[in-house]
Image 1 (cartoon, rainbow, N blue to C red):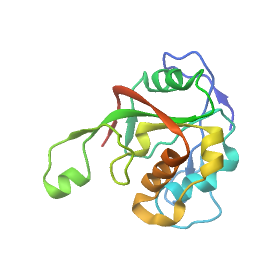
Image 2 (cartoon, helix red, strand yellow):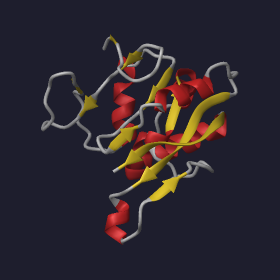
Image 3 (cartoon, rainbow, N blue to C red):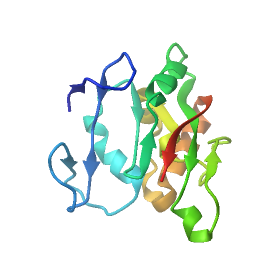
Length: 169
């Protein structure tokens, strides 16, 4: 990885790591993980941790859209907080695919309270020391990210950023 100059309206360096276990993805700018466990988010994020060098981490999936002000708002909320604060949570618009499968309209996920199945990875920016202490709960399948954020909420306080800062499509 390297520090990237980002075109977003932010004033700090951003490191971008893209990790995949899929053999279908192009190899340029990707770290293809040796261990292909065919599992969901947290297991892949756990395997990608050695490449992460920053102070704050945002984990995105291929069906997430981060609004331009996402990083500025989320990192701004965490800057200057003490060690008792481990992460920030924002609101997102959730378009699917679960809504399409069950015929529900799009909804705004607030991310609080922090409960499994009620929070999306796109909603969270976590401090390095928090995720290193708690780790990724990778053995829980589809809801593995939710179990990870639930575990973080038991160890650390979080900051609520009460703005819609992304879309899950």
